[in-house]
Structure formats: structure tokens, C-alpha cells
Image (cartoon, rainbow, N blue to C red; front, top):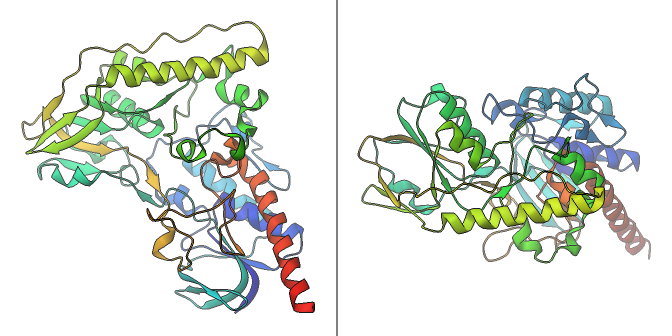
Length: 407
């Protein structure tokens, strides 16, 4: 089967690309292994909501959240409905239930193999997302057999875990949210804290994202960042999709025990780093710098959150002692391109190489990765600008190919 462009993935990024391609009359197909917005339908816990307020849910073609709660936060099912409606509104050429098994270079573009058929295309856009598989440390298999281990994509609600204590590993958005939910369910939660980004839900009377949007923070471009590689691998902001702040102080006020980063597990003993105080001080320092940026934009100074309270924390817990009955690995996710993209565009660590979504192999693009082209890229709201940029670059590539064939 022939087409000009194959887009792999029918989430918000794949559909944003489809809309921009259609606006330029570029023939294409969107291949999706499940349903439209499949991850939002099947992958996440029951209480998950977007970290961004509803007014930031905007996609190409002027499509946006149209409900009566612009300052609220969409639940996962609401996000799935919105993306599904967008696909229908755009008349996107989506083929659901079609799993891409391989992408190979060809003499004039690419061969895209699926479990249904084979496509030949001049260009390919990878839009399968950055959260394909959970990342867990190598020592996770040292958790004693009697302790349940679960990653966030397998967790649904507190009832899914046995009664008793829970160790949540990681204190970014996912870890903070699940630690709060599990503690409120009556379990004693211990959260192991590494590097994290602390922000208040509201500052100076407005949602933190209102300030990040208005002050231009979200529009900082990738090439302007001092250390782009590090920035792309920082944890997500410590936020919850609700009108309240969730941070280490609020968790401790609920009774959550805060310990240092989980450094390893040996003979059933969980070993924690002793650098908790320094890690929290660094997060507070970064928070102060962010709020300084906002205050410079707005004028004056807002009321600052209290510094993170750090109590003496144990350096180890015996996971065989019965205190901890389950471990939740909130240690991040990664993309999974190298299992099916058979193109030499990966570094020695298996990570996809790209410059603003343009890979080293002509005609192969990626969208939907953190800080792809700007800070806004990390969120749904960034898909419109990224898709427009990449579509322009893709169209220019097609024009070059046409010129070569005509010469």
C-alpha cells in the first residue's frame, strides 16, 4: 500500500500531525495499534487527571476544550473523549487495531510493516509517545517475593494493593500523587525521594501554568537551554491535577514518611541515600528561581511556599519484616522505538537521536517527546506548534525529493 507519510500513533500528537499534513494536502495515514487515545483509555490509574488546566488543552485547527470548567483538570476518560472527538472533527485517516511491527529504510523512503499489511511511504512520523514502557532500576528484581511490585501503568487504585505499608519509589508527579492517594486510603506510605521539581499549584492567585504561559517560560526553545540533554531527562513537576499543592510538606502533613533516594536492595534490605536534605534544598532553590522569574514578569513579590521540612530519615528498611507489603515504582517511563524502528538513528544507549524532532535519517521524524522543540512540547498544548514546525520541515523534504526526481 502506498502513501506519502505514515504517522505511527493516534494520540494527540499523531492527530496534530495529521491535521497539519491535511492542511498542506499531504497524503498520509495514521496507524494505531489500539483505539484512538489508547493510552488514556487503558493505561493509567483511575484518579489520574491532567496536570495542565483545561484551558491549555488546545490542538491544531482551533480545536480546544469547550466545557464549562476551563480552570479544572480533565480526567483520563475526558482526555480520551476529547482526543477521539478531535479525530472525528479532523476526519483523520486513522487505521485502528493496526500494530506497526517494523520500519525499514527503502530506496525511496520507508517500508512500514504492520500486523495487517505493508505500507510504502516517503516519510514517517513516530508519534507513539514517550511513555511506552516503565523504567525501573536493575535491582527491582531484588524485592522479596512476598512483597508486591507494581509500576504506575499497572496500578489502578488502592484496592489493587494488599493492606499494609507501601514504599513509593520516586517523588515526581506520579510518585507524589500515588503517595497521597495511598496514604489517604489508610495505608502507611514511605516515599523514596531523589531529584524532583517542586512547584506550587497556585501562585499569586493563579494556576502555576497560567504564569508559565504568560511569562513565556513554556516557549523557551530547546536550543536556548544550557543543558538540553539533562533538561529532557529531568523528572516531571511535582503536581496533581486538582486545585491544591502536593509536595513533600503536604505529604508529611498527611503522615507520609519521607526517605532518601532508593540506592539499592541487598538481602531484602532497601538502602536509601543520605542526601535527602541536599536534594530537597536543591528543589527549593530551583523553585525560588522559577518564582523569581514570575515575579520579574508580574512585578512585586508573591508569598513563597515554606521550605521543605526534612526530618531524620532511616537509611534502610527490611522489606522482609512485614512493614512494607508493596512497592510502587514511580521511576519514570521511556519510549520504545528501538524494538521496531530498524533505522540507524540510535545512540549507544539506545536512545533516538533527533534535533527538534528531525532524526539523522532523511524523512524520519518524531513528535511527542519532552522538550522536543520547546518547553511547551512536554504538554498537550505543545503539539500544535511542534506539528506545524515538523510538517513544514517534512514538506520541504518532499519538495527536495521532487526536485531531485525532476532533474
